[in-house]
Image 1 (cartoon, rainbow, N blue to C red):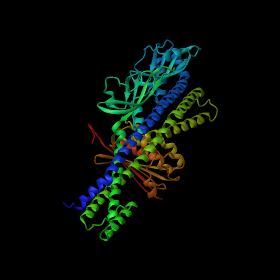
Image 2: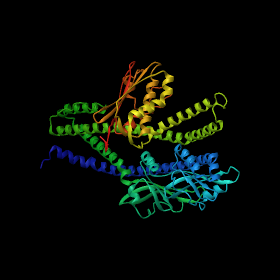
Image 3: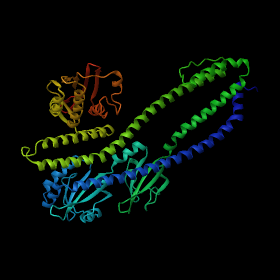
Image 4: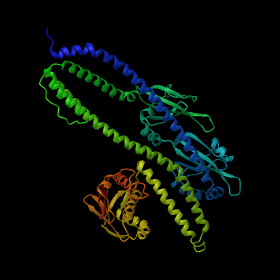
Length: 587
């Protein structure tokens, strides 16, 4: 029986090409798997070390903050007099301006006098805790613990009594909750879990938290570091790395475990395998066709195909693929069209992935900047603000103070607030928004923001025009809404010369409340408008690039719409549209 051309081609391919390709593929698959496993372990170890280093850094920061707060004379006096009301007032003030989850004060016997994070709780004895005993003996200390609030870092410093002896203790703390772990999961792609010895106490994986028994062989119970840990979770094989966690005194606390599904780690390999296999097949096919193209009858169509292939290889994905004469070449043409189509899809996917990687890199950088600012800048700012408040109290009556001293104090205080707001802008640019909505009259909110911005507006010589309808009610977070509106007003004022005009209008449009802010400033060109919300981008010298990005995020978090129109030399108009409020909820 005479074989067809296609059958002969297949037979020759199986004999001369298929076997070597299969052997090469098997060897390459093994190599890729081992490479992926080694890379996974190396990356997991780096992340684990990074987490433990971050815990140490946070403990040191908490200890410094506890030392500063424990030196507060108002706290020392309230503890000495056992004036719980004055103590709670001061703690609540400090708690508002810090990033703490835990802030409490105990007396000289180790009993809790006040908790800023749980105002209703007091009287509990903590004298059995080592760091409390150390603080009562005059030694500050920090540690990791697992309690009713979850896993947390805390630091304790002694409070010196007004008359000399140790009056009590002040404790600061942060929770290592799901938010803390999720940040690392988002950045690294690893699931993370904390263990107290061998018992799971916190994890990014809801499935892991459902496991009631200990993770067998997954983590150490005596402080050993385990690399290449393999364990099963709900029937799926996991690869992991565990690092020990220690108390500050050197005793073993537990472990941190990082893991990923084995299938997820190896998933990229499947794509590589397909690409390699397809490349081998295509290469062999073209080599065979080139060999038999010595015949003149095959030379022309092959040249046409090779021309198209060359154009595609140079990136011309829209190159027209010819319809060839013979059935075999027609089939090749159809397969090549399919390949080009898949290449187009892959190219688009790669471009989208590149864009996602750029965004991820920006947020990684932002996370580093946010951490540095939050822990290395805001704490000193808080201390400076406390010192200014104490100085203002010591100065007393402004009429009796030296000339200009009150103005200088207020000027410094204003600069501290400005720096704090800049830090908040960076923090909010990288973090999620938590809204506390309430029914609000937006007209009143606008007037409140104008009153707040009045000194800067007057200094810049800007004219304000208001056109506010009645009934501008919406369910918003007043603080966030004021923050967004203040950003818009200050941006508009700073874009105008003295004598400029700022028009603010508020109206109802169906089931929406529309706020329009129009200025007569310098405006923006098309290129600036296109980059306006690329963080961090700014048109102002010394700007952070957070302003309008923060405004848009706040508006979107309220289910609102944000629109901007601008023309160079004419001015800019910003419109915010929010769902109007009606009895029973938003319309």
